[in-house]
Length: 251
Length: 251
DNA sequence: AGTATTTCAATACTCAGACAAAATGTCACT
DNA sequence: AGTGACATTTTGTCTGAGTATTGAAATACT
Image (tube, rainbow over all chains, first blue to last red; front, side):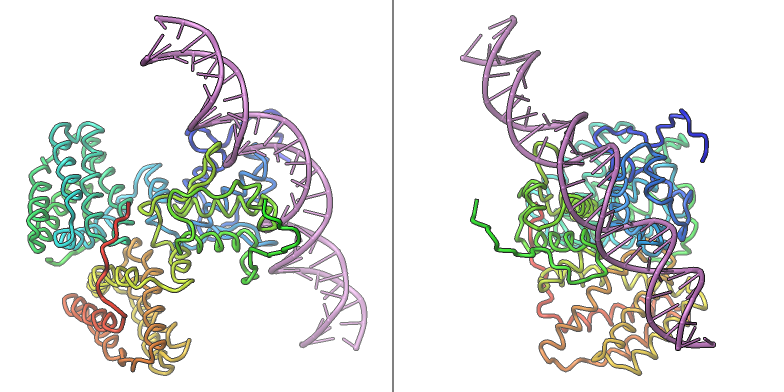
């Protein structure tokens, strides 16, 4: 028994009041797992101790564990306890998991992998969008472009417009599974721009690149849309710390 | 109040004993949502009533709702209740969500979309695998090939070998996000073969196609691996009911 | 009349403690 | 040495109570 007398450590920070208690606990544990504080194979404290430690009742703690299990991060069985699952089971493209990954500072290699995925997916998505886009897709993309121009990427509103552009493009692809990758793309965008600003790097003006993609999609020119998007991503990737792990061949 | 006197409907089927009660409830609700029985925007019964209806206590019911919320299917707030989220928020590539989708009979359009994703992702993954594969990746893929040959796709063991081949290939790509798409690919494979057999269609022997992919990956020939995988998927897709995804707005 | 503020009611949320079930390890018995 | 009963540990489920949040209705104010 540690002398927990009145240490009064509010282990679980209710930073986001919008998150309920179980949500805050899930975030807390999730960040610890994704940061490596808990390794795959480790077993968490038994829930009775853990909840005492966090100064919460078992109910929200258990619900937090259920959430993590739903995202493939942990697995719990009677008599064994709750253990961290192997990385291959983690749902890395889950929006929460992504946000937890980047919560404590993003891993360069992982960001590079995310860009690799974007480079694979988004050009094809743009090509599909060029053949399937509806009027309101184009309207949304155009409005996003205008917002990117009005505000810049220096401002929150501008960055949101950037994400909205890519989100609208994926939506225009008409493929629900591509659409569900939106969160991953957004995470990559967010952290790329943050990196840029953090290093004070002079940010290329990506507006013309986006405009080229839009023009091709609006014109229904699939090959051009593919090419324009590929170029956009390559240029954006150039700004990340290291585009190292991929010895990528052309195309 | 319907006279539910002693209807005694065990609404939640404990079909899988491995699933705990909360897991069974989550599956039950998840299937109902994904099948359209509950539409986006609908609010579920308040948890007190729902748990009574299912003849379980509130604890496992709440945990089930937490799991669904973690997968983006529902969202719950005090005074409002638990409401089904818009489709655009659903984590369609979540393994459980995929299995629930295909639980009650797969949607042709959705399966087509899944193939579209495979067609985009897997060829590039094969190309990456050709440049990054390690010895044990090749060993695993080769063993999977042998198993596919020994058993056929008529047998469970053969189908598992097929999935294992694709899983190993994604693993060999070295990209964690591509790896996390394994479940989606596996779901597509599973339901394609089921479709084939269901219609008694003479199943093409896909073994040579797989062998070609393996050879290219083993040889480190990225363009050849890309081409071989693209061909494999096109041929596999030929067996699905309809290869045209229908445009469906994801509100 | 219209707008801001207060009150209210509905619902999920949290707590506490008990008991049940599952799964692993142990130990006697064959 | 093997096999089955049993003890133990941990999660799983149940119950009932009280709290917090939030949308909407009611009220006060301009």
